[in-house]
Each structure stands twice: as structure tokens, then as C-alpha cells.
Length: 404
Image 1 (cartoon, one colour):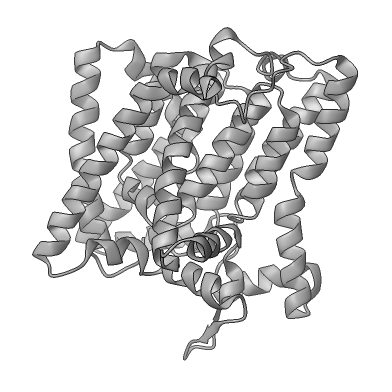
Image 2: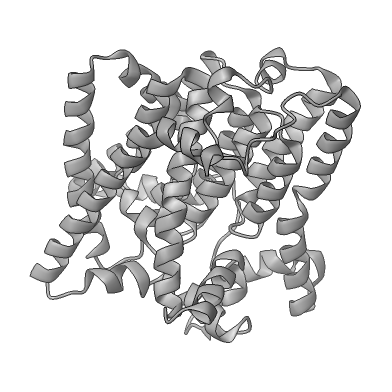
């Protein structure tokens, strides 16, 4: 407990601020939903993707829906870690599968906030770490962090894996990357970060990435004992085999599930791509998204939405460029680049793209650094105002007809 107390105290302002923002969001959602005669809890746990996850937890894989246009929606598209956890909680408690998904998301969102704090503190200091967590909490789609979806679980695993990479904890990094690969297809981004960091460790290429693996005094108290390693400076030989083993472990989760789906469908290693094609998901370099944006300019009211989409994409790309110029560690840049590319260049449901970008939390680090340099009162007003707007938007969004 003493090992956990110190890092908890250090992260407490970030975690308390995060909890306050999420409570505000849930309260506004409850009031808004009640006014519309809907159940906020049902919106969080028993609609859209949440239903697919609970169905996997309850009945396993093999369920599919055939649409009139010939598309086949198979539950093989959903990675297994969240359903496994829902099933485990259901087995040891009176919680339903949907309840289990909600509990997992709540706990995982706090773990994600702590991981984001640890990463941001390691790179820019404690104040920036607190600001990064608050900015992640007040994202317009932040309500998804409290839904029985896999985004919070994935972000928690990704953030702590990246922190382990930055501090040279290769076995922890590889294990968490494996679990991230069992959570969402974008787990490939975590694997890529581990591999790039490992290669730079072996070759010495990329001085910034090399420096990022040194354990700083603040980093030593930023993480709980299950992430910190008591052997803070292992011998070079130990580092080498730990790094190699971490790199070997990292892709096993994603690769194992994809290969299993291929075997299950009888379509070989590319079988998972066929499953995703049934959902009209694929990687087309952003062509479908560009057409979607272009179609917004066919009439005046929708043209405003088109302008907003272009501005939003431009902001994402600008934040990434600023992160590069500020010298973010290479593993963070690789992770963020892969998450962003998969989100923007996939031919998936376009309304979900903001949600798909949510795990790319390093995009927020330039804003967090700027907020950390501002006066505390000004930062508090900015975060408070955005938190209210985010809560209102989240309630409006979830009470709409389409999936987030």
C-alpha cells in the first residue's frame, strides 16, 4: 500500500479533476435523458456497440446480422478483452454483462486518466500532466469514456504501455501492448510504438527517443508499483533481453485474434479484413471520408458542417505537427500517428471518427503545456467552461438517433 500511496497522492489532482468532469457529464446526461423519457443508463450500457460486446460475453462468437443490401455484420469484428472482463465480473458478482461493461469502463477511464498523467508528467512535468488529463476529460466526445465501450480500456492499456516504454520497462510495455491488441484493432499503434522504441534502443538512432527511456525523479513516483520496476537501472545485457522479449510479446494479442478469426472463418490470415468489409470498414487512405466531406458542400446548411469537419481535421494535423516540433518522444509520435491515420483514413462510419481519435491523447500535450503555463485561475475558467459545453454536447449526442 505504501508503494501505491505516493503515486496516488501525486496524481490525485488529475484524478479528482477527471472524476469531477465525468460526474458532471453523467449528471447532465441523466437530466437530459429523463426530460426526453429515456434511460441514461441504457444509453451508456445497452445500445450500439455495447450490445455487441455483451452478446459476445453472453453467447460467444458466431452471431451475425444479414442486412437487406447483402452486408453481413458479424460479432467477430469486436475484439475479445472487454467481453472477457464482462463475463468475468458476471461470474463472480450479481452484475449483468451490461453492468460489468459499465464498471470496467468506469475503472478503466480512471486508469487511463492516471496513465495519461504519468506520460504527460514524464515529458513536461506535473502541472502539464494534470492539464492533459483534464483536457482528455472535457473532449466533446468524452461521454464515451463512461460508456460500456472499449475506448477507455484501450486508452488505459495504451497510456501505461507508452509510459513503460518511456521509462524502459520493456516487459510491462510488451504485456500491456499485447492486451491492447486484444481490445481494439488500433492496438497496432501500441505495438508500433513498442517496436520503434525497441529498435531505437538497440541502434541508438533517435536521440530524443533514447533520452526518453531514462527514469526521472518525477517519473519514479508517477506510477504505481505494478508499472514501476524496482530495478530502475538494469544492466545493459538485461535491458537487451528484456527489450527483445517485450518486442516479441507486444504483437501477440492482435496477431493471435486476427489469425483465430481467419481460422474460424476459413479465410486464412486475411479473414478479419473480410469481417470488417461486411461492416463496410476498410482502409482507403481517406478517400471515402473526403467524399463524405465534399458532399456537405452541395447545399448551404450542410456546407457549414463541411467547413467544421475541415477545420477539425486541420486542428488534429496541426496539433500533431506541433508535437513533432516540441520534440515529443518518438514512441508517442508513432503511436499518435498510427491512431490518427487509422481514424481519418478508414472508410468506417464517419460519425464515429471523433470517438476513434479519443485514444490519441498525445495530441493534447501541446494544449496541456500551454494551459500549464497560464495562470491557474485562467486555466480553471477555460477547463470549467469547456467541461460544461462537453457535458451538454455529450447528452445531446447520446440522445440522438445514430451511434457515437
